[in-house]
Structures are given as C-alpha cells and as structure tokens.
Image (cartoon, rainbow, N blue to C red; front, side, top):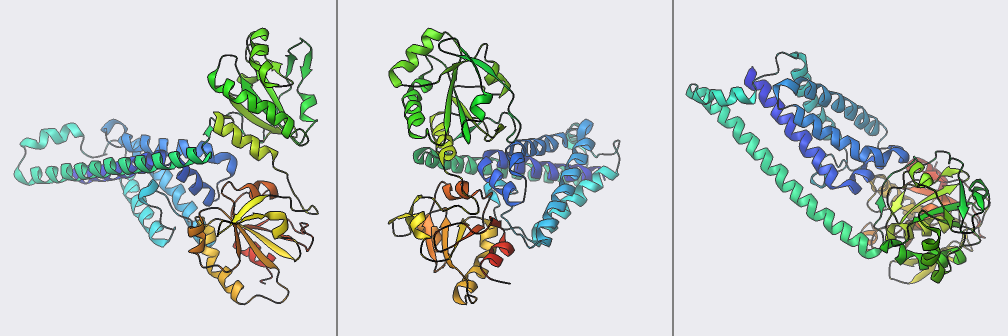
Length: 468
C-alpha cells in the first residue's frame, strides 16, 4: 500500500508540475484558453499566473511525506473545479482548445478530457482518504529499501524509472515551449504587437482624485481631465530615462494628432528644470509633476516609460511599459467607439489577396452582417460548419456577410468560407464595436449604420444572420 500511495503521489506530482510549468512558459496561450473557457477578462491576467503557480506548488508538495496530504488535497480541489468547468462547457456544447499542458496539449475539449481529469481526481481522492498519517512511503524510506529483498527492489527501480521518464518528458516539454515562446515573442516584437502587462489597479476600478502641478507651479486636478475627453492616457516618464527620451517626440505628435478624441497627460517626477529640458525640443504639452511618485504608486506604475488608460473616471486598461506596448495602447485608445445608431467608421483592412479595403466602404450599399472572427478560436471552429451551411442556403431576407478576421490569409482560406473576408491582425474592429471575443457580430443597414447590439456566441450570431 505504501508503494502504491507513493506511486500515485509521484504521478500526480509529475502531472501538476508539468501542467503548471507548461502554462507559465506559454502565458499567451494560457490567457487565450481562459478567455475561451469563459473566464471574465478582468481575471484572466491574474489567473494565468496564479493557477500554474498553484499547480506547481501542489505538485512539489506531494513529494515530501510531511506535506504530501496537503498537496493531494490541493490537487483534489483543483481537479474538482476543473471537472466542473469542463462539464459546464461540454453541456453547453463548447469545445475550446484545452491547453491543459500548454503547447503539449491543445486539442479541442471533449469527453476524453473529462475522463482523464476524473481519473486523476480519483487518484488524488484515494490519497486524501488515507488520512494525513498514511500518505505512503517517503523518499528516505525508498533509499532504505535498496537493501530489501529483490521483489521490493524491482518495484522501487520501476518507480525510479517512471520518475526519470516523467522528468525527461517535463524537460523536453519545457524546451519545446521555450522555443515556441521565443518565436512568438520575436514575431510579436517584429510586428509591433508585443506588450508588457504589469497589471496594476484592476480594470474598471474608479480612479482616485489627484492634484498635481504643471511646469509653472499651478495646481491641476486630474478630475478636470477625466471629464474633458472620452479617454485619457496617463504617460509616466522620467528625465534621463532612455526609453522615455525615445518616446517623447511621439508623445508630442500624439497630442496633436488625437487631440479631438484622446487626451494624453504626461506625468513625471524629479526636477522641474530637467523635465523642461527633456520635453522642450519635442513640443510635449500639458506636462504635470508628481511629488514623490504619489500618482504612479497609487496606480501601481512601477517602471518608466509606462502608461495606463482612463475612461469615464475608471481604469480602462492594464498598466503597460515599453515603447511598443505604449504605442499599441495609444492606437487602441484613439480608435472610435461605435454603438447602435452610429455609422461604421473608416478602418483600413486588407483582403485575402492583399488589396487595401476600407471597412466603411465594405459595409455600405447593402444590409450587412459584420462578423468578427478568428480561425484559431475554438468557438469559431465549432460554428464553422453552421456558417458554411448558411452560406450555401441563405434564409430569405438574410443580410450579406462580411467577415473581419485575425490570422493569416492562408489560415482564413483554409476554412473554405465563400463570404468576403477582411484581415484585422490587431483586432481593431473588435475595439471599435466593443466586442469582447469571437465570434461576435453586428448588423448594419444599407448606409453602414449599426442597427443591432453586439451579439456573441454561435446561437446569437446565427439568429442575427436570420437562422431561427
């Protein structure tokens, strides 16, 4: 029995350490998977780190006899919660990619996933039910058994071989995920998509009242800025910071370019004269000075250059640092926001053959269903067959379909859809129409005016398309 319990502990330990490390090495995939599973967007960044850390901690705790029961209880709790989430998604017909082991396992969710999870759950339950005092042999006891009879020695060697095999598998998965992550980061950096998310105050939280001074010493209350534009971006910098100095010319350009729809507020600490010298050559306006870093500390901006967006007196983005991330935040914050009754704005996109297409023209002249899509989204893949059926046999009075999709032209062509597909690699259309994920859709009239709310999910999108 002791050897059985030890074997189960080693098995569960290997599974949870492997799963946790793989998730940490593929945080982008982990965040995407959590969104696909229905986790609220505001919790995704937090859980994408804490969940794999808990998995690794529980896996490690299973090995020493002193903490083995607590490790088993922790794995049992997590497996129970995983089983509930998997069951709910399967009951609703959702089969997003699991990503349970990072890049090692990215198949769509299915009943085999639930069965595998249940098997691990029973293993953890068996260990827990033995009680805290009967968790099986310790590693020290295994060393002592090396002088035991041959049959026991064979069993111990088998367990050692199993442990070595699991370690080898973990090592290779870590290397594979490391290579994949490096390639993804390289692609994102090259395309300008890379961003550094350092969390900060939760999105949606109210912004405290701040009083700062301008470069002339006059007191400025930031409440005035919250009410002066739909979105305010606070840009934190320091004189002498190389990354800040690189961005300051662009900050001045952004202040002029987006003046009608975005307020950019540069905030710095330090000596006023040094701030003047940094900003002077770049025509950066409305610079404010914080004393002792009170604003950045309150908003948890821990590095410069850093930025955070505020809308309607509430936090509208995570804190981002670094040039590429701040450029992306400015771009997204400057995008127009369109709701029911408003016209689709101009947005440069491209067709699958590389032609430049403006969104406002693509939806003008006919009643149009604008579908926000991704060839890599599990929910979109589930809906693909229904969409093809709709294309081949459109209901009477159904609108035309224009698909705005992420991914490459090749990935979108491979889906076999006949409707017009426009590429939107940065998901600008989703920001414009306020869609939280894919698939989502809005209906527009012949003039390109939005005549419906944003509908998300297979059933609601198909209903908007005229399927009843």
